[in-house]
Each structure stands twice: as structure tokens, then as C-alpha cells.
Length: 195
Image (tube, rainbow, N blue to C red):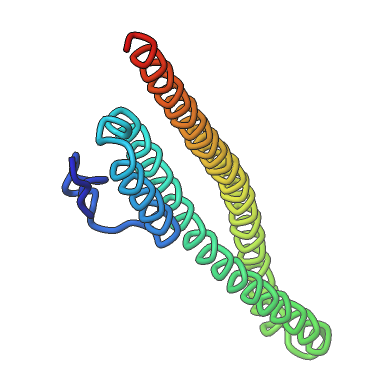
């Protein structure tokens, strides 16, 4: 059995379009290790392990992709939040200005007083809307940060599981190799006694 570059993702041709750089590098390292093991031992050595490693890599790539999407979304929400805060500060300044003009012209122009009162009410409504939007954005950012933390935990668990599987597999190879060597030595000793 000869490994080819596309083998790791041939089960679903549509999903092989793009892998994250880190997962691609990891897949290449594993691919080289499989080639080395096949060359050294036999293709049966990796036959059962390969689907497990492929599944782990695909899950890892999926988690990376989701994480990147969440990071982009988080950045957009942060920008939106900054714009809302800027707009809120601007509206707040406008409100203050309107209130100052209201005090200045209170005695001289009754009509302007009414207009300014109307303007203040409008600004208060806008301020409440901005505060609500800011609160909603902050809540959403909090949820996204929690999700990001969960995704990081999932990634770390997958990474640890993958490392344990490789370690366990290498121990298995060493045991098999040792058993083969001991078996050959025993056979040779038996044959020499027969002669």
C-alpha cells in the first residue's frame, strides 16, 4: 500500500479543498511517519490506525475553521461595539450641548425651549437605544469568548488524545518489533539444536 498526498481526505472529496496551515503541517508530518513505518515494517502496520488519524485531523481542522470564524465574528463585533460607543459618546455630547442651550435660551425664547425639550427627549431615547445595543454587544462578546474558550478546550483535548494515540501506537510497534526479534532468535536456536 503506497500513501499518496490526497489519501488522508479522499473519503469526502468536497472537504479536502482547504486545510488550516497548522493541521496541514501536522498531516504532512504524520504522512511522512506513515511512509517511514510502511517502508520499515509493512502497510498493515498503519491500515487500522490511518482512519482514526484521518478522523482526528478532520475534527481538528473543523475546530480550527470554526475557531477562525468565531475570531472573525468577534473582531467584527468589537468594531461594531467601538462604533456604538463612539456614537453613544457623540450623542451624549449632543445631549449635553442641547441642555446647555436650553438653559441659555430658557428666558428669551419659549418656542426654542419647546424645540430643545423635544430634542432632549429624542437624545434620551437614542441614548437608551445605544445603551441597549452596547449591552447586547457586550453580552454577545461574552458568549463568543466563552465559546472560544470551549473550542480551545476541545482543541487541547483532541491534541492530547492524538498525542496519546501516536505514543501508544509507537509503543505497540516497539513491542511487536521486540516480539518478532525474540521469535526469530528462538526459531534459530531451535533449528541449531535439531541439527
